[in-house]
View 1 (cartoon, helix red, strand yellow):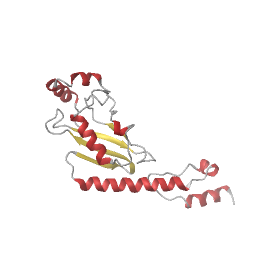
View 2: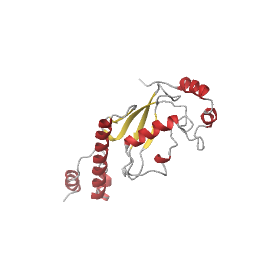
View 3: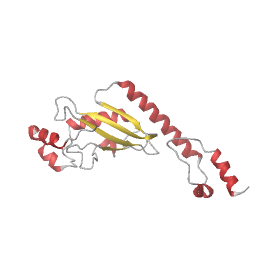
View 4: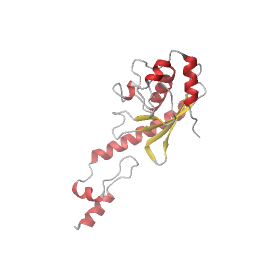
Amino acid sequence: MSRRENQDVQDTNIPSSPVASPAPPAAADKHPLQVAKTVDGQAVLKRLQSELMALMMCGDAGISAFPEAESIACWKGTISGSRDTVYEGTTYKLSLIFPKDYPFKPPKVKFDTPCFHPNIDVYGNICLDILQDKWSSAYDVRTILLSIQSLLGEPNNESPLNPQAAALWSNQEEFRKMVMKLFRPSP
């Protein structure tokens, strides 16, 4: 069998999945795709589809998320600031990127909208234990978004990413002014 015919046979055996992409042709000749990766990709796809449906049906106020473009592994989320907090009246956009081994590893979550907060840095990175060392495969997109929404009103000043925000937190009136000064609503 020629190299091209061999490649054609391999290409017809690769299942289509938006999460698992086939190896480039040169790599495919040297390292055939492993079935386990395809199965994992399908499991991640099913899990994320299930989470999307659950999130759409839950009706939780102030949170939402949907896959971005054509990739189920990249989502855009929104979180509204809770009532009676310095974030009331604000809505933040977030990016969620799910790894190939989700839900066994947490997604990468970042604020796209600037957010002045003790546990959020100027780049949108979030210091939240469930997105790091306290991650559990029992968590889902809904619990992530609700946890971040809760974090807005109840920061962990013991572990600040933004020391200026942590120092100002005790003065809620001044903190609110800073939140509104730096807040840029997304279109």
